[in-house]
Structure formats: structure tokens, C-alpha cells
Image (tube, rainbow, N blue to C red):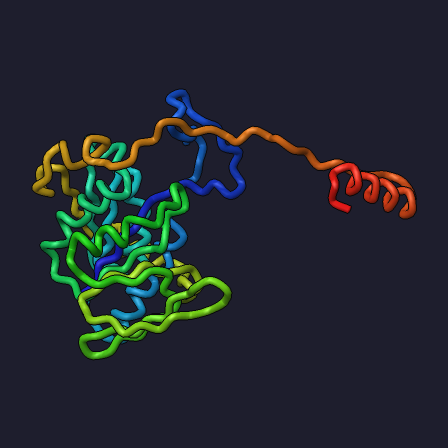
Length: 262
């Protein structure tokens, strides 16, 4: 079972104070800590577990600069057999469609029975690259996958739907699955794994290797362009009511009446 896992190197912003940069189209990234995208982390773990059970190979692929190698090294340390980084200044500004085209240009030439990716990326949250990539590759796909069982020539997947419902599908392979968090428990990277990963090659490819032209990548090849990024203005503020319980209850009742709620 040969598996390709698409991963992304994203900033950790949960506890960071974000600011808009001078272009007004991106965030200020100075001082931010980067790591593998959370959803992609689960996709990688699922791929490694499948390889350990059924044999085969796992190839991690990403689009980015040399800084992104740290994420690929983590993939190698966790059990990936090969890593590919697609890098070119002309890739800058690629939306989900252009990103999928870049990935497709390389993956279409790889032998793979399964393509895994995260449901979405923690930075833009578009959740579109996986489905577009599947369409370009001409393979069936499923998103929001929380359970994956492989059979001979097919895969049975559980998809998480709204309201606590699940959908079970049987899909022919090769296929692409965008997995949700919680499908497994990603393992810790061992010291031995890190040492081995440092000795493995990361294959670096550029625009010329994709067979694409400048018109198909970056902003030129994108359907969507960021016009402006801004922090939503604060329109309402919390009001703290002080006093005894009876006084607070009276104030709440007055507020509700003044707004026509009672």
C-alpha cells in the first residue's frame, strides 16, 4: 500500500497576538512558531499505521520554502519513507485551486493507492485543496473522515456529519481522504526517529519540475485573491452588573424590557 500524504507548515496562532502586516493582506509572522498542520498530523499518523499493518511506503509532500523542511523532517521521523518539497517564488499567492494544481502535477506521476490529507489547514481553513486535488487526479474522495478501514481494492470510511450523525461509505481505491482530528492519536517523535530523519533526503522540486507555467500557479493561476485582511471591529462590549442578587435581577429585567425582549 503506497500512500501519499499532503502536509502543510503553519503558524501556531492559538495563543499568539496576531497583527496585520504592512500589505494588509497577511498577518505579521515575525516571532510566530511553526509546526505541521494539526489535521495533517492525524493524516500522517493514519498513513504510518496503515503501512505498519499492510506494508508499503509513505511519501510526505508539501509546498513551501526551506523553512518547511522541519515539518517534513517530523514526517520522516514519524515513519514516512520519503519527503518532497515543492518550492518556487512563483508559487507565492496560490489559492486552494492553484495549490491543488501544483500538488497534482507531481502526485499524478507517483504510484499511490491512497492519498491522505487533513480536512483543513489551521491558517486559512479553506478545506478545499483535498477535494480539488481528487477531482484533478480523477479519483473518488471523502471528507471529514473519522474512521478508515481498508479492504481488497476498497476502503470503508466513516464520515462525521452534523448533529452527531455519521455516514458510512465504501469507496474504490485509489482514492483521496481528508481526515478529521480524532481519527487516531498521533505518536510522539522518538530521538532515534529524529536522528534517522536528519540523514534522509528531502527531494526539492521547482516550477520547471511540475510541467506548469507561471500562468497556472501563484496569483495568476488562482481563482481567489485576498483583497484585505482585518480584525473585525468591536461592536459590543460586556456589561458587568454589580449589587445584591435582587438588585442585579432588577437591572437584568430592566435591560430586557428596554430591548423589547420581555
